[in-house]
Length: 263
Image (cartoon, rainbow, N blue to C red):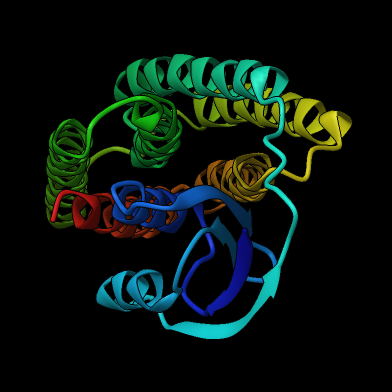
């Protein structure tokens, strides 16, 4: 058994990891994959030559570079039951707050809350794709990725349209109180998710990626809270539209990454 190490410069979130898993899973001789998203390193445990693996990774255009191959006795499969339960917990919390922020976002007239809700949905889709990928054939995975990516991109496009429409029509300012209250609740939920993930002390790639995503969500929650305070102080809807547009950009980038999985 061999272990080949690759440096992948553009591998920094679960989307890229899922792309790699889907690309390599139908190659013969691969016993397991080990990801380190922080260092952007992939270890492939396999039998036979590394050339086919290297060629497949290069086709993804993620900046893959072969580092080295070493011999190992066997590939130790890790127990992932606990990690899957935690991922399901994070997914459920994210999807629940997608619904909560979407509803109160429209009621409060806040594009910041609506955009943050779509960011929660984007994270939920990535986690769901990672879980669905287990045990599914490559065609099924691509179908799921394509549907999820298009759906997310359409939502982001609709959000951008609404931001522009509200900016041009100079509508009344959003309800800053609901912006702040709901964002604080979302921040608490994300902080709890981060605590659970860190408590697991897992070195698995999905868990590390979930920590990164959840940390980013906390920053976005804080951004919406600040936007709500700015709406109050400036008596203007502009801060809400700015934070909304910024988050819609992040959601769009996530959608494009998911769509790459369907190719």
